[in-house]
Image (cartoon, rainbow, N blue to C red; front, side, top):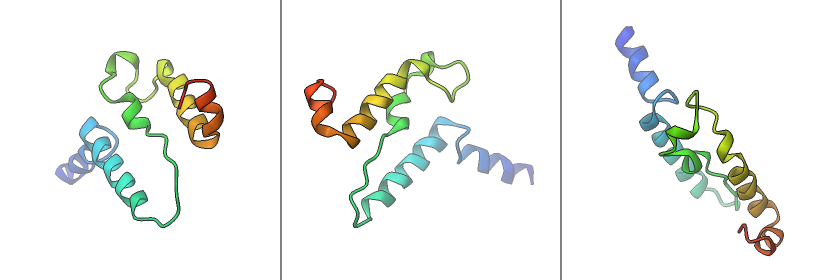
Length: 85
């Protein structure tokens, strides 16, 4: 049982590799949809930035970049005028 729990933790959100695999699966699934679905890639915004987090889950210094990415999806013309898109 312990080996199974460990494997699940390693393949989930408790490691960078697990999150990378989960992110890749989600992006691949979105790519199969007929609908145009925008994505703010939180993993892409935080990957390699371990120095910007205290707990490995929250990245306060990346919040503005995340909001800018969301604005670029929701209002691309406004984002371009502000130089964000």
